[in-house]
Image (cartoon, rainbow, N blue to C red; front, side):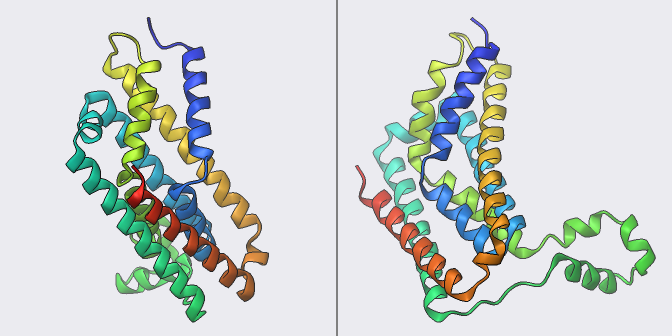
Length: 235
């Protein structure tokens, strides 16, 4: 048996249902998209999708099975992920309570400072694409890392793929079969959370209101805190 379009469509559908269900990934994307804008939301989405990609590959080679079968490994990963979610939730709640909003500068300002630091004339800046990489703001790297860590330290994702992959992989899968399913997983995950980020971006004018932002910070901080505690105590 080989992977067919029907198999891939069914796998993408199951992945979409799993990805769209509310959980830590959704909460962390929403937090960064609201607090730091669409680019941070996109970075978080890519971080989560990268974590999903890693879990698919690990499940295919048996590493995820070792994590799921080892009580010590599973518990350690679960508590680490729970602690991270609780920390992010508390920080978000503190932002809401203190009502301080230190918005980072726009990327264009970062490009200007970098160009000045490297003594690059203004007319040459467009010819140096590497400046855009250097100017990718710290908040975007932080958002990518947050999405990646939230996903990687959730052992439930490992269990999910342990149950899912055998239903769609051939009896004697090739590396190509695994890579195709991994690519589909990445695309579905990135696509959904990019859509979430775009919806948040479309509501920017409303979300920029101080009262609304404080309410959202309170809601998201409480949700992240609850998700972290649930992950810690869930058996």
